[in-house]
Image (cartoon, rainbow, N blue to C red; front, side, top):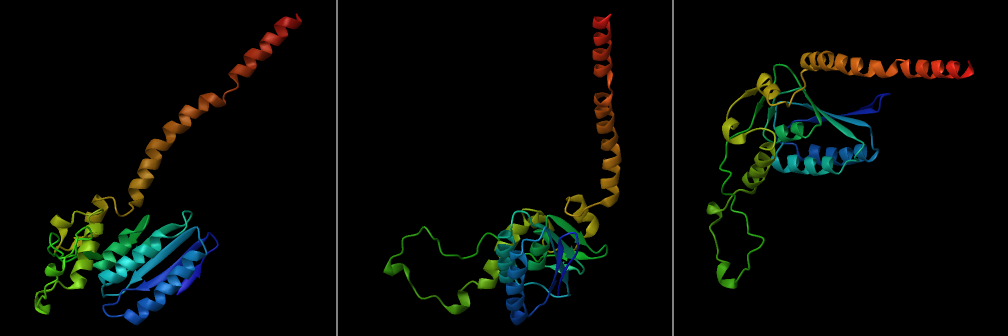
Length: 217
């Protein structure tokens, strides 16, 4: 589903599914088309009780990073978030989330992903057969990448494996606090007006007018 309002806000619903490869393949194409129109605001509504797989989350991130610089991204979590879904939500420049929703990402060993060293020089003697049961699951490697990106917003080491509620997200500045915004606006808005008011007084004009009168006399 995709909607567009008069203020340039384009809505895009993204279902959070545990197993939905066919769905995500179709939606990624729709996502690219929607962003190609360069909307001023683009809101992704995340809804569902599943989890966006790490590989899909990384793909969504790459698509969103290619959006036009004028497009402001809003992410709206209408459901609780897990794993890769958390990363997609965090990508928003403005983040909305249901008051009683929760955020969760499981704990994994981030120190060892068993990835091939891209700078290594390989010899034939190094290419030894490894039992398939000893190989690292590619999904775990992708999930580690997701956690490292989440760590740019939340301390993964301390919060992984724990249920995170909205008040905690607000403490990290990830959720807008409308009451706090109104308070700051009222607290810091008035001094700016008072500083500008003296400049608007026509005192200099009155002085110049008196000087002209004295010359005529």
